[in-house]
Length: 99
Image (cartoon, rainbow, N blue to C red; front, side, top):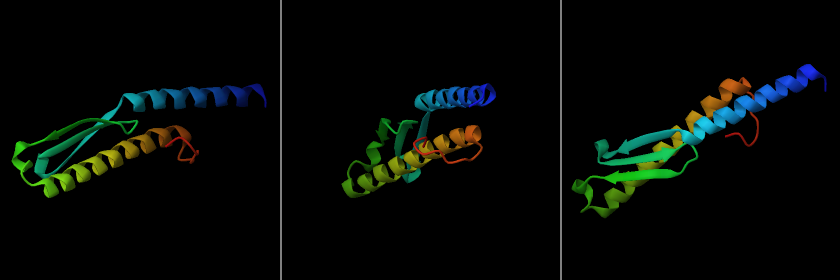
């Protein structure tokens, strides 16, 4: 590998590391039921918080559905954020293990 290719690989690695760090610090939120359930999740797909309005506390089945819906939406948003972040660096090339 010549020096130019090595330098390009190192620059790509540095950009990917920076994008991963930014993603690790990113948070997204999603709501369901018109905002009665809110889930906040990190870019690493860890739930940071769940807020539930007392208005839905008496209907457990509906509450379970709303929590599931908000959580799934938050995960989708975090995965989309990761995809966009890495896609801008890799030029759309799919590199296994990045997302």
